[in-house]
Length: 188
Image 1 (spheres, one colour):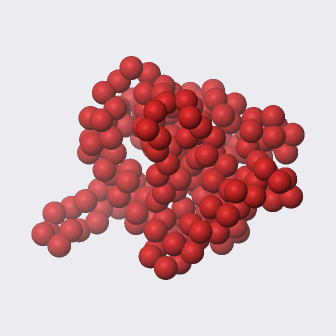
Image 2 (cartoon, rainbow, N blue to C red):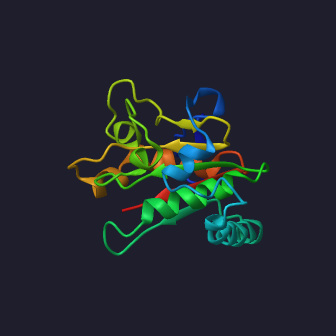
């Protein structure tokens, strides 16, 4: 469905993958804890910091309408994907919202590893307009409300892909999607 900008130009959007067309992956609390994802279990003491972050993000969402959250780091291998996965898991426990965690770290994408995924295609495939990648792939851990949009790491021109028209369509589609959708981006 195209949108019309004030200048009269047409802006494209895509339908985001929903729960009904996400690939369900086997999941349980033991798997989550083995993978270091504590945000799904509010009774686990290791989830407390993520619960606090969730509360603050939901306050900001209510006050400012913010629905897209980026997680960055100054250097690689400092836990950015760990934080992204756990904040998204904590947010996904609120039934008022549909939470997506999106791997936009196109060179070092690691959310696939964190969640134990072997995606056939991912965000990078969508951005590169690979055949069959008309939408980014989405996965849903069994019994959870979280949607995972992974990518496969690789040597690519990530800045150019993130600035591409397809990336702008994806981001625009997220902005205009259901106001109950929240997006956590694992960024470069």
